[in-house]
Length: 99
Image (tube, rainbow, N blue to C red; front, side, top):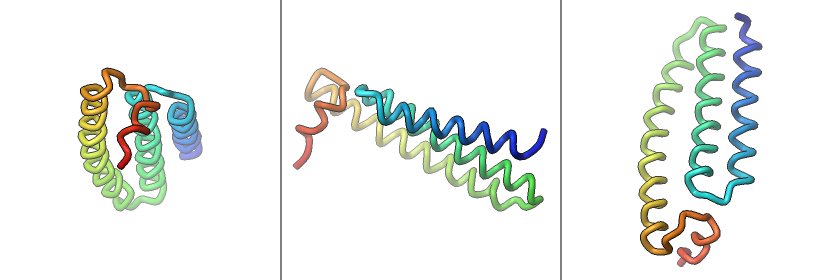
């Protein structure tokens, strides 16, 4: 399979993630959109690494996966706090949490 196919798939995933982040009011949906975007970046890193014959892109993708796990943990903790304080996970409720 050519590298351009992987890059197009990554671009499509990234666009779906951006669409999900911009249109969802639910905090879980926003987190899923962010995950789609990070997975698209990882796919592009691995595809370009494979095309160039270097392992640096795969190393960056592995490091990015570790950061993504930490981001999910923090994001879900924020969603739990939002639900406990407002009994809702809508992002409109998060505006009141500033300050």
